[in-house]
Image (cartoon, rainbow, N blue to C red; front, side, top):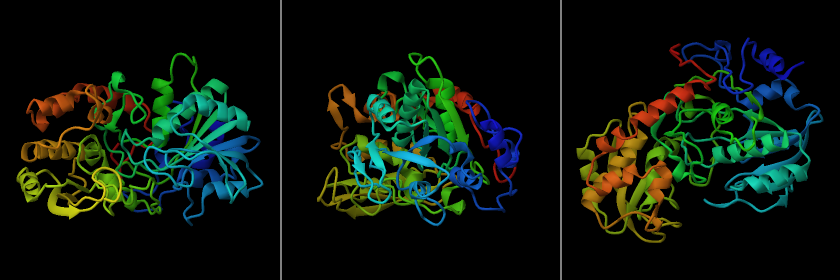
Length: 432
């Protein structure tokens, strides 16, 4: 039976996502108007088929602590114990397979004590990943990691590099889909310009991409795999069931596991596409507190910043004067003044516009805190936004509307590309 037919049978659908551009039919989203069965992840769909997509294959799994079942057992542990699947290796992204490392770190090779499987470090090295796939002797690469919906969250780029390596080695690539936790309604923000390509953004997608990892895999395969390879990867996306584009993660019925050490809640993910821009400044973005990316500040900042931000009356959000002491990263072990971000209406909230407004307002009220840079020509804000425009406009005294206007043409072009690769077409109200 062909893989396309296998998935069609699993979903009861005439059209399913297998290769770039193919989309699931409406029957992949039963339940109507948001009242119905809980969301089933791609792994649950795969398991319900008796792992048909993986039978007869030597499987290598790219995962991390988020690769769990509904009962909180890890899928690698389940696959390792299954006689139906020959899993032979595991590959860990940033923070490591078991989640032991902090930001910017992978985890060195080890033998997993629980399963006896070799675990390779797949963080930020395409050539090494290709060598590791070959060394492990795998036929199929399986990717299952919970993303958070922002371009600079690195798991999607581990997926992209793994797709490159799989294409080069003629391996199959299977993505087990999971929700975009901050909805998949729309792409927002600047699109990366190629000259600013780094591992926090390798290809020209929007800062808040509004896609699931399965949809991104289809977009990567359809638009970006490099000409040097000369071919696309043999891609299969195993889709979710009962997921709608307007769902927030806490509406899915799925358990939330920290995707990384400083992403403790869905609230964090909601603000992250905007407040993560403070990684590009001298201010603490709240790492080393219980509210990372919601608490922002630095020594000697006081109530005037919160007051100025609330005067802007930004949609869906308010700001509380806050004081905190981060235990790691910037401003570690220093008392910082600043704000806590309170999202009051997340459907009205615009994370990226809010993050930029916070930076603009901070520079007006406390201008002594400037940009973080590696040298005079390499600014972190340019890496995170994927363009130098936001930084140059802010330095010139411009406001948020001027910044946002500058990326609209690029964003419109990305939205058109994105549309071709969407798998899930409906909201709970039935709108496409």
